[in-house]
Image 1 (cartoon, rainbow, N blue to C red):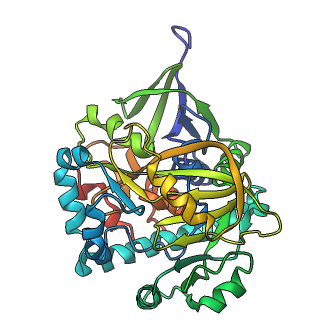
Image 2 (cartoon, rainbow, N blue to C red):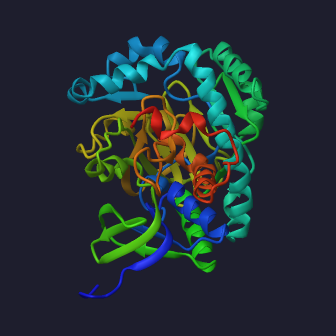
Amino acid sequence: MSEGTPAQQVDVAVLGAGMVGVSAGLAARQRGLSVVIVDRREPGSETSYGNAGIISSGSILPLNTPSLLKNLPKYLTNAHPALRWNIAWALANAGWVMRFLAAATPSQTRPRAAALHGLIGTSLKLHRDWIVQAGAGHRIRETGWLKAWRSDGLAAAQAEQAALAEFGIRSEVLDRQAISALEPNIIPAYSTGLLHAQTASVDSPGAVVKAYAQMLAAGGGTIRQSGIRRIEPHGDGWRVQLADGEIAARHVVVALGPWSAELLRPLGYRVPLAFERGYHQHFVPNPARKLLRPIHDADGGFLMTPMEQGVRVTSGVELTARDAPSNFSQLEAVVPMARSVVEFGDAVGERWRGARPTLPDSLPMIGAAPRHRGLWLAFGNQHIGFTTGPGTGAAIAAMIAGDAPPFEAQAFSPNRYIA
């Protein structure tokens, strides 16, 4: 932008073009507000690209539940594929780790599950509406997803089924024969399964985010690709300084996922954000032995899911610095386990790494920043950002318009961590 060129002026500037940011922009535009979404990359190219593509009704139980405490001894060895952690990072972030573990109690788990149930319920309805409106309905599969145990997982499956049933979420416990009937093309490695029946999945989460962004643009919104340098209050609104100019907005939505905290730091906010890093790799599928739905291997802590690019194998969680060098050992450990269940060929493309933003209670921030009018926070959706993005965006758009969000959002208030 040349000197003297006026800033682009909008009602709402959304910073971040992942599922959460695009959803916030789309929901705001549907309310008649002028909207620009800004990101350094194209929509759906960062964390929202690399997930398992599940739109899950049953993802109401966060990572830090009592089962985490039960499994902690085996995770402390730092050898289990479900969870790896960097010792130096853990020591430097001991406060976050202690708060994360302190939330893993029965008394704190149910209220968080109830909050996520409301957010997910809204999100699922919007996903199913938007994906058709965006012309991407061919990407969604209404086949549920399967969590499966190689060892005796009956008690764990029944306990999870009971926890879901408390919120009216339907699931089915399956034995080995029922799993084979459901997924006839996989090798019968599992003794117990839990089918999340009210769950959908997509064959390309990045493409779905792009489709939503294109729907926004077709409806009069703007997508702007540029580096975001800083945000600052300006008059009754905000000025967003970009690498190629600036934007003047009445409202700014920070939806930058793992990059959100550093953008807010100059404004005096210290956000206790950590990162559930994850990896994936695609493999050539065997067309005669197709995987029909995502499968979560409970013993290995990884997922296998059929994607447009091939069979995607995703690793478990790695707790470390956002930009620490990649460590593919976690992914390499589970690929042979995946091959023992699903027949697939050579690897396709590059291995991927992403960082999922996580707060100590595993709930996102959804709401107004406590000390700056017109500043809205929408991040921290941990490993279920693809599922919960639409509900998060709809809530933010409602709050901007002065309306009540479509679910009870008090549990997600930014005030619980920043003041």
